[in-house]
Length: 135
Ligand SMILES: [Zn+2]
Ligand SMILES: [Zn+2]
Image (cartoon, rainbow, N blue to C red; front, side, top):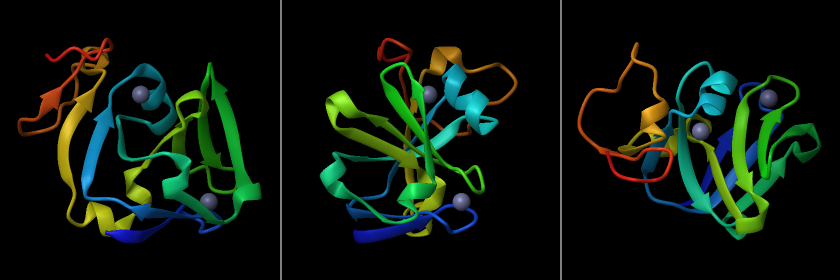
């Protein structure tokens, strides 16, 4: 897909991914779960050249989680992205992008060793621990 549009709950922030398939993954790490009330489901558009902030850039608040930037909408609180500036790599909240989640392929779980016991996703897929070793 090309030029895939996404937006936060209030619509203040609009983001476009220039080119992407339908890959969705989840992260079970402590910080993702704490910020999102559970495992965050994400897309991985990669470099900033593949991402365009169409509207509301000034409404984005960045939380610096060590060297990682976690961006959210300062109006409605929606999680927007995880960004590693040193690696020029964006991952974004999959649920912003209706066209991706409509036909998502959910095939990776990260930080699986940090997942609490009380929930799990049905089905089989690749699972990596905090060291990116397959479980
Ligand atoms: Zn918003
Ligand atoms: Zn995480």
